[in-house]
Length: 506
Image (cartoon, rainbow, N blue to C red):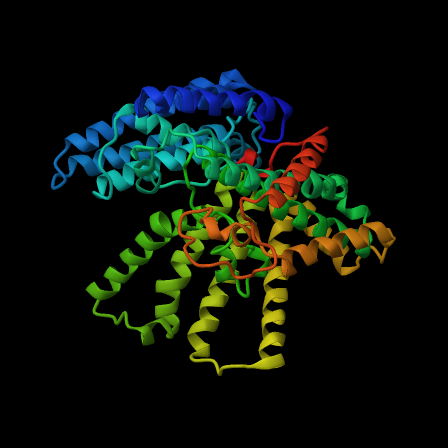
């Protein structure tokens, strides 16, 4: 079921909210059970055949969590249970996402044609799989207490994050459902959540979807494009991806808030980033956190311990040596980003996407190490450096996004060749197209983001500081009610012919 659909807006969401708060009068467990049922219905609405996969995943991982909880923390049994559970989860993910691609690679390498019907990819399988793996790891490490089945099922299925994230930690979500007033209606939370949802809806329906009209044909036949046309396609996709994921993130945060739940931040103006490190701290923030905690940090820690065992230094100065930098920074970075790229989809283009960002991050870390303490800049000098940093970072991200979207590496390379000018200049976009792109970049780089607009009421977990700007700050006032009402009307009228969110395919 899509957030940007009439059935969701006028049928599912009102019934889910009304049932949650009505049943909540009988007690929190009943309200939580209602949310689980509603979330399973939400997931199975479009393709009911996906529901058994989700339910089997929940049953398996909850059983694994019970075995881990029953095992002494000092014994190796819980470690083996965790490792086995992770392996089985990843095997299921491999089967649905990668087995057809992998067999095709084997067939191409061996010259043997392998007939295999690729299984249909269940929606959100990456997200609900990694969410549950996160729970098992946190439970094994003693960061959380074992939940009952109802709370575990709700943690895995809560519909605002089920299809495309954010990737949640049990310790940041489930304590909220333990609060006594969690299932009591709050006028502030309903108004705040609805307002954030409307902002996300407008981003999706008024910006992301219309911007996508040139993207599909352009990536399908990149060799037919001149330089101007190729740049138009690449920039349009970059903008579509930005506003599509930004819109989804806002809608997820808003929906959760209507149910009195606060999600962690997952999107924070990534195109304003002044470095690739900064970019990954702003884009899909919960995925970055997941990659750091469960991939980068364990590998970096293992390599650090190996150096210590070998009598090699692990001081800050060691990071500046070629061997130390390679072992302590470059290896864990490339390992993490390679897996991050493959996580996004089956295909060599996703691996190239991950490796590109591995190169970017490695260069960024090397720059920080070698630069040392940079001189403080003031005035126009500081402004010029910031602008140059933002533009360089964006161009690097733009290059990576081409591989992210292209159907193959060959298509991506062909589009880049066209952008360089191998096929001539081509026809310039129309004046309306140029004005549209300029307007969107002004929104991205000059306007406050959703978290800043709603910052007085802490829309996401971790936002406790006052707004960074004052000229556009939401308050529960009649004026804002009219503005949001007009925005909701426009967003609903723009839902005709809506499309899925881009991250639903992952």
